[in-house]
Image 1: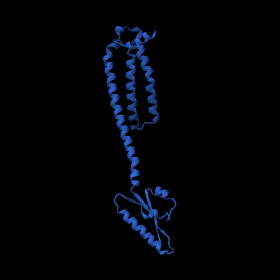
Image 2: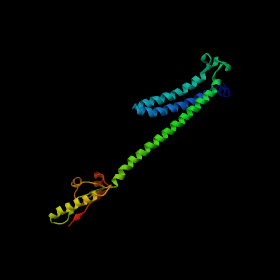
Image 3: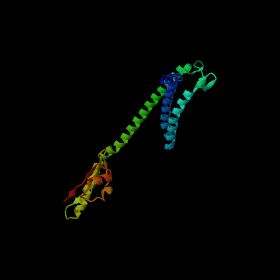
Length: 210
């Protein structure tokens, strides 16, 4: 069969319409499955098997469209059907309508997927930025260092720490770490950033008394 005759037969048997319709419907099914399967907690391999089956069905659909034609008596081999006996030319408008409907559904599903993905990204961004906002309004007051030899100043240093914590706690929106949580950190620590990370705060206050 020469190429010109082959292309004519493809057009007469509406193989190209079957290809377009199958591609659109297959895409719709895959998109619907990507939404429904996770909803019903289906294992990942189910989606892989489904997509593989849909892909393998494409050449099968083309072969069937080429090999068989719809007649008043039902499906018959194309070689046995005269052009006037085929119903395919009568189904042209129906095929076109089917393709248009499938395309509209595909566009609607694509818009839904886009909105769903955008919403998920916004939620994820909010989750990522929320902890940062909390850290920006948090502080830990470390025990004050007693630089004098007088041990009584140690009680004075503790009193200053308590007073600062009490005062800061009155500020609305500011999270202040309790003195109990900071007691284990020595005065004049070497790594303030590590302490801030451990206490989940963005600010660390240290000091000394003489």
